[in-house]
Image 1 (cartoon, rainbow, N blue to C red):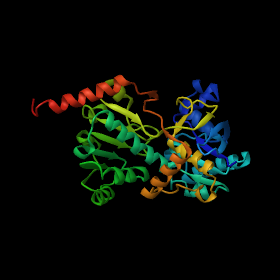
Image 2: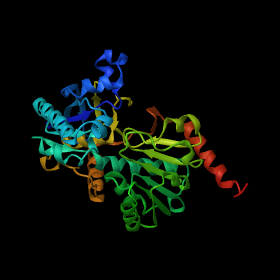
Image 3: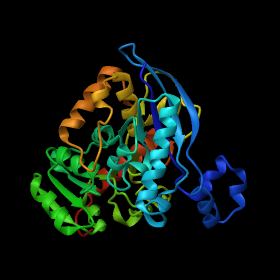
Image 4: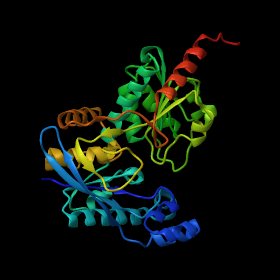
Length: 360
């Protein structure tokens, strides 16, 4: 049996109170001063995973005590790499053959390359399967809302990143038009010119033209607000921390927001840690790490490293997911299951908007 580990970390300082209750009463700067000096720890032992092929695996969640703000704004990058290298060392000591980089640890710096140099076991960001499930999820949601991609506009926010770029490359072949949104106009324009019917912009408000949206930036705060979205649009938020403001959930019940990469894990998996998902489901990045352990091929343990994810990698990890019995586990939105009423409202809003004459 090959084993895996996966890094998790607090998204905001108060999250650390799950392990240190006194943190509820401390100011954020004090919490971050404390956590920056803490070593990674084993959070839980994961058991019960059984592939459709009969292969089994087990693993561990490894807790990295850093928040996204610490990783990008407060600490030197080399210090962050060192902390993630310590996570890999903890995983190695537990018997893991590879470790997956969760949430912000997969996008900080060079996408795992420097972490791999500090690790004696394999390292993957999980981004290949994240791309695959984001694409599958968005297209399935389009079916639910009766959005015909060939007659609709797609927007990809964070399009020059490793996940966004490949999403744009794959999905643009099916949509009538694709708006790619990035922070650097030159890089964004280069991408737009390389895909069918692409348009480049650095103005996130342009996504109001889109019927279907994938957002996957590496920012540490929400950037998509209620006013940015047209009635009846579907948006797949792959980013962690999320890109879509909670205001959208409160103010726009005519929009369908789904989280990218919610995957059903085969077997009777017990994570022994509540990260907000229903039982036996996980993020796609976690699932890629588990998949690679089940496949048991050391040549694949560093499956997704660096800032680029190729279409070939997406195809390969999708084939492995099918082989081992992984698949999408329905839709989730803001940590809750999407219900039929949410889909019905968004679909009705879309149909109403389509029938209202322009200028009315």
